[in-house]
Image 1 (cartoon, one colour):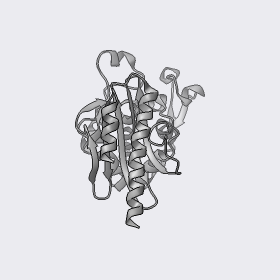
Image 2: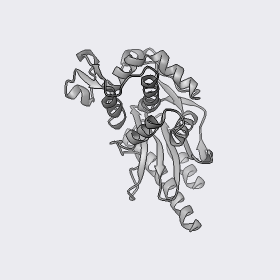
Image 3: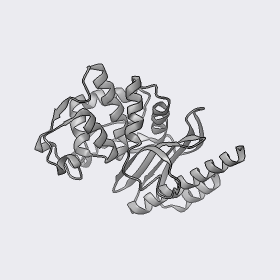
Image 4: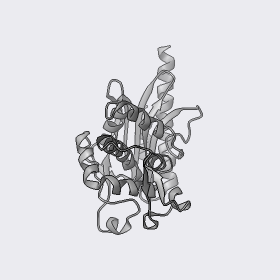
Length: 261
C-alpha cells in the first residue's frame, strides 16, 4: 500500500496531505504532510456541525426550533436558496450543511452560534490548525486573505473522536455519524469502490483544493481516511486522484482481511 500511495503522490503535480488511521488503536497506518495547514473549503463544516450541537445542548435549544432566514442569507448553490426558504429548523440546516454542503445553511448556523464560539470550541476539542475566519462564499474576506484553515492531523483527530463517540451527549454522537453517512457527494473517496461501503464523510472543494475525509465502516474492519489535495489546477483530476488513493487503501484493507481469515 505504501509504495502505491507514494507512487501516486510523486506522479501528481498537486500537493497531497493524507492519512489512514485505525480509530480503535489510534495508530496511523499511513500519513503524509500531516502538520501543514491548508484551505479547509467545506470540510470545516464537520467541526461546525459538532460545535452547533454542543451549543444547542449547552443552551437547551431544540433541534426542531425554527430559525429565521432572510433573502440576504441566500447564497448560490444552496437548496435553501433554491426554495427561497425564510425559515428552517436547526436540524434541517445541519443536515443540508453536510449532505449537500449547503452554504446558506452553514452561514445561518454560524450567525446563530458566532465565530468566536466556533473557534473556541475547535480549540477545546483539540483542533490546533482549524480556524474559521469567513462565512461561506464571502469572496470579499477571502480576497483580503481571511480564509478558513485546517490540517490533516486535525481531521484525523476529529474523526477519531467522532468514531469513538466521546465529544457530545449520546444521542448527538449518533446523530453526527448518521448525518455524515447520508452524504450525497461521492466524487472522491467512493469514486472507484465497487462494494457497497458505508462511509461517513465530508467533501470540500474550491478552485485550488479538493478534499474528502471520513470513516469507512467495513464488514470486519473500520478505518479513517482523509485525502486533501492543494495547488489544484483541474478539480476533476484531483477528485480522480482522491478516488485512486482511496481504492489503493480499500484494496489493501480487503487483502489484510482475507489474510486474517
